[in-house]
Length: 189
Image 1 (cartoon, rainbow, N blue to C red):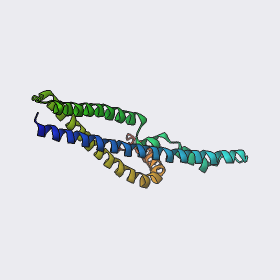
Image 2: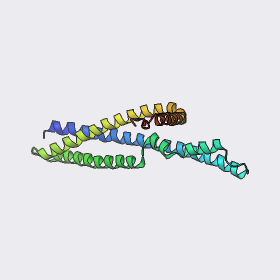
Image 3: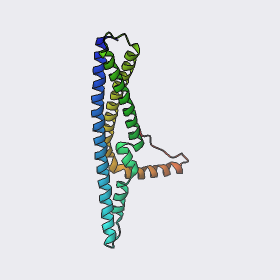
Image 4: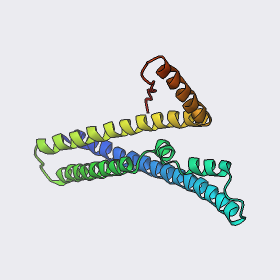
């Protein structure tokens, strides 16, 4: 390992750590904002239904439908992913941070030693950590882009979901009358 290589890989690792921390912070803010939005909708819908019940009227079908939509766990999972996915992301990021910090410390330690040798294993380890870190940032950027596209499309699709389900049910009864198998939609997400 040369001094130039040590400087380059040290800078790359530091950049990956800084950008990665910023990315994880942004993802966490997004998760918290969507969780608060979902919880607020659910609480508001439940409060309306409870007010109607206390008034002796009972919840209206519209209130029950709004409450059902607000508490729909599938909608919650579609909006920002399942908790297991978030846990996996945090575990992967934590392991990657530990590896990157270890690589950075080894490179700094190697540079601090007077008359340091080639240290091929430090060079290899630091290169692998830096490459995996850069790839992880690329994957995170692509995942964010896909999520933004999906989130932009969901509000336009959401109001017609019940209509599409009714249409699918009618279409499948038509297919059943003709002796055909029911149709199931393909979804990329």
